[in-house]
Image 1 (cartoon, rainbow, N blue to C red):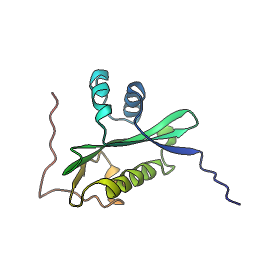
Image 2: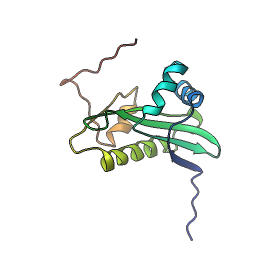
Image 3: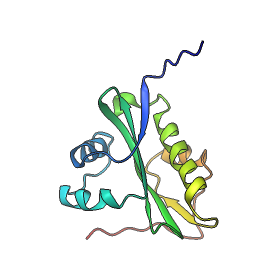
Length: 139
C-alpha cells in the first residue's frame, strides 16, 4: 500500500499575471509591472507551479533562447509554505527538464538572492566570481 502524505502538487505551466506578482512580492522579491509580466510569461521555455489544493504557493521558470543560453528565474515559495522542500522540488523539476531537452553544452545561469545559493548548489550551480560578475540594469 502506497500512502502519499505530501499535500503539494507540481504542475507544468506558468501562473496568471496576478498570481505571479503575488508570489514574487510575498516571497520578498521585487514586483514586476503587470504589462511586462503579461508580455513575458508566454515566452517561458519551461515553467512549473506548486499547488496546495487550488492555491498556487510556488513557482519557477526557465527562459532563454532555446539552444545556447538559459536562465532559471522566479523561483519562489510563499513564506507559509517554505521549509517543506518545495524549493528543492521546483529546482529538481527545472533542472531535469534542462537535462532532458536543452542541447549539450548549453549555458544555464541564475541569480541567487540571499542564502538561495545553498539551494542552487545542490543542483550543480557554482559561483561565477571571480571569472565573471553578475550585473543588472532596469529599463
